[in-house]
Length: 307
Image 1 (cartoon, helix red, strand yellow):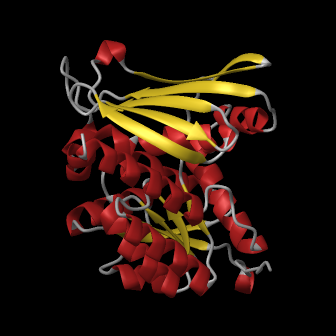
Image 2 (cartoon, rainbow, N blue to C red; image 1 turned 180 degrees about the vertical axis):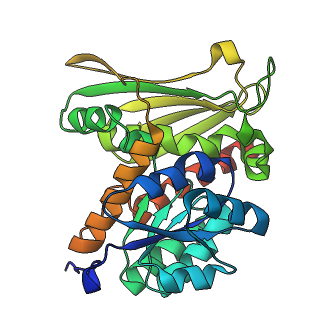
């Protein structure tokens, strides 16, 4: 059964609010919401009132003094918060009838991720997880093309981020406590898995081992029978940083193309959320997929703890 939602009642575009005021919110979420032609940027709530007020002034929108006040005014809400702050607030937003544009990972605990997913089902709201490679172009088209092909034998992915580089200035995201605690496995692991899973199938078994700093190596077996590896870190030397995915199979070798324009990708994620809300058809990057990513990352974390 599908459910269709009227997001344009009274002839107005859907209103979208933002929760969060950090660098990611200021650089990506807020500009994309302000520029989106099919919705209205309603306002901002943040845990730091001064930062929320400044971001709201920048985009000439309302600043809210509570999440629930924002939910009451909005048809959908976008999250730019740490995952374990995001998850319970998203459950509250779903109960208020708001559709959810979520950041990754949706939570760092399986129970919280499951509660979030079940809330979207229970309250009949749509949810989309912003996984950059699935909405940026040309990477999104490339993933769809490779997923439509068979014969893949193996793949390797790497995301070598320089958030905490040993040879230079830290990025603005280095101040994030949850990134300091969870590292590349949880921050960039969702991106790698978001490409490997649709092409090779769900992960049926995995192993994990540590490298230097927060570097984690995953070895994965997929439902298609193919295997893959992923190397994930936020602590790469600047000269060694980069992102890549390579697929090998009977059709040869396919390599993930370069991409940019992250705010544009975020706008397409909002398009996907509004389309899912209108049609009732879940997007492939819905909260169920977000839950599955959390399950896999938690399993990998558990294997690391056991070694």
